[in-house]
Length: 489
Image 1 (cartoon, one colour):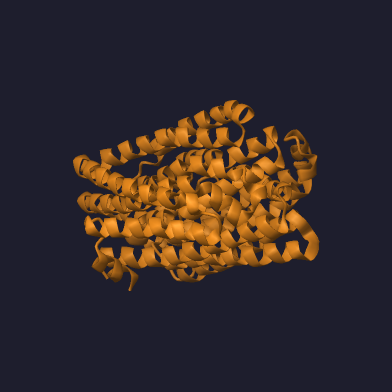
Image 2 (cartoon, rainbow, N blue to C red):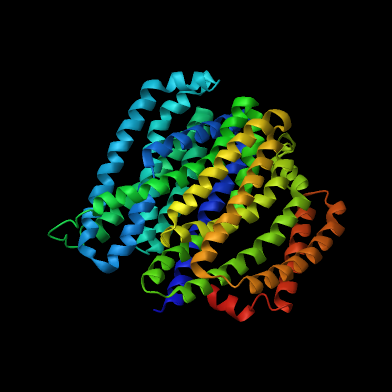
């Protein structure tokens, strides 16, 4: 199987798993918000998850991605080192988890009080289990990405999504409320973690014959490379979670619900870009090692073109239909999420580019440069949130996210360009064509927007926009129908 076929196969597996994960997440979001929890309960659940995500940083650091980088390298260079690397990663992870969860169990009441919500203490206590389960689920998924076994990695994510849906809904229906939903998350991640760890043991730890000697300095390099990745991951969490925490600190649980709902819809829209970025990134490390940077550039430029062609029109369409979409799908109680979603439409485009670019930079060995950029923009995001949330509410939090992420994307692209020498004029012409397609599509949707009075008309408007986009993309040559068929089949 050649490289392109391998990428297509990996993309299919990852896209299917992301589809399963995102559909299950969307169903969970819909059932909890529309039927089982009021905005206060919904906000309390996801505020607690936001706090736990910040704590999770110390429990994980950058070990997962650092291990994946060395798994990718040594599976080709010296497979006998893989068992040693797995043991080192596991030992470090267990040590960190023991420290963090013990501290959380000991001080969860004090932490909840310090954050201004003593009632969140039970969520934080249960969070010790959440942190352990989530850590092993994500680490095994990332490790299998490093081995370029994307079908396994994809399966782990799909399992976690479906199991979360089943158990979170079941526990809430049994009368456990928002806390029950959190325990559903724990069970979902625990099941996927069990599958992932088992695969790693059987396929890699037990199968590879350990080298007689652990390569001198390899364990140290594994730990050292996790440092810039930790900084980047910390910045990612600040971007994705700290704003939710601050909304809860400054505003109300209902405000958290509005903001979180907007972000969840944005995350759902980003599934294809995440799948593509997750698929292509390991190939950059392999191609840099073999000096095939021209091939890496071609893969990235093609991927970026496809991502922009999909997400720029989608974001514009989302701005147009955000208000009827939120109120008709989730109920009038969540109308406050509509302006958040309109602003986050810009973030969807930016994050789609980031999903394509960030992991690729890690595999190209530019994790430190990306970490610096992410750290600076995340601190700026934190500062803007402190200023804008008290004055503008949830809209301010969304605006801060878009403003700082714009800078981060620009820096990422500059770093990638320095590695791959992107053909900027060609990309600029592509962006102009995509802008023209988006403009025509937007006019078509705007013409029917006043007619949206029910869910059926809402989806008719969305379908009209999608059909207009497809026809224009095909007739302008941006989409090759035969190529699409070959990828799908």
